[in-house]
Length: 233
Image (cartoon, rainbow, N blue to C red; front, side, top):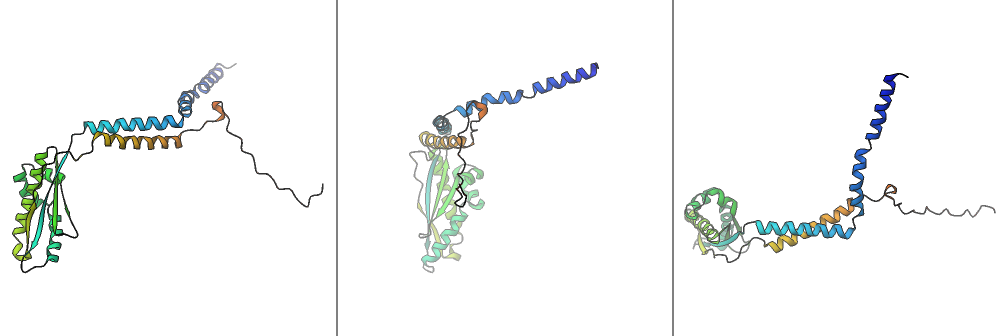
């Protein structure tokens, strides 16, 4: 016998014996995944999500929000409808660089901080602008909201002769007594709901048992054929 031929055959047999190894390693993992009960997957997903959500709420620093209000007042030569329209415009201007640039002097924070943590809102029925600031400290949130409304009224005062509408501070910001961020209990509940949902999705994509796992799928009977009435016995 040719020695090269025997060597080639031995290498081929070794390769054929080594090739099923990865599939063999994957089988225990698939078997464990198939053997898990649906209720266990749901409970495990909800528990993991609840722990992750609770940890996020506990480790995230609390945030406080304070809101200050300004109101647009028409002069003798204007009407309330004009004041309502200008209030909508002032609400969009409140978070612009021209206003925040002046507000940073009174708030004691840079413009970038005001831009990220200050929001304004208006009402379609009342000529009022609400400025809400969020910060890690209650006193800082109050200072930021009051500083923006102060800068906004100063900008509006420069054009009141042309617009015939004056912007006045309606209410200063009140120091918040509780954080506006979600507590750990709420974040834990949201995490548990998300974990349970992921557990349900895992049930849908979980591999089903096959004959190789020792269990055969249930046999489905085929459709019954109708008898031919014209066929002779």
